[in-house]
Length: 228
Image (cartoon, rainbow, N blue to C red; front, side, top):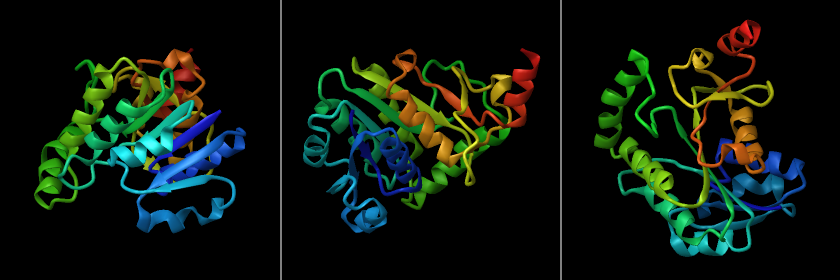
């Protein structure tokens, strides 16, 4: 399988590169020119396409001939970076390619998610502050995901909980809706978020799903497993 990782130089992206290589995939990584050095540990093992991930020409070149595309949707700045990235991938992905996007729990597909007061406050207060500082725009990520949801591609949108570093705890568990008791712990190892993204490439049950994930070793996931 030939896989393109859009946003390969970030922490999540680098974990995805490693997981993909571990599975024997041919890997193409896309990242900003100033971040290419972060991928030096993979030199000679992957192809790197430098450039902005919302540049359609960069994306077109990078994903040509790919069977799967893994996309880190980062709401950087206030110029529609996530939306531009998602649209470029949707426009140029080879027919039939598996497309897997990452985002946060604040994204909802059908409006049936139930959010904690803490998360609602973070989005309501932190979102406008981040936009005012021109640091990030959460609405940009919302628009990006809405375009993915509306597309007829073979997409999956993986919605991550709070993240922590550390050794892998295995493939995370998931639910269709935030608010499910299995997700209550709201924590996932970053390395396992990446693992879920890569594993989704070959899991057709996740096509046109927006799984919200949590660590399989979290208290809420263990409690759910025990009740079963």
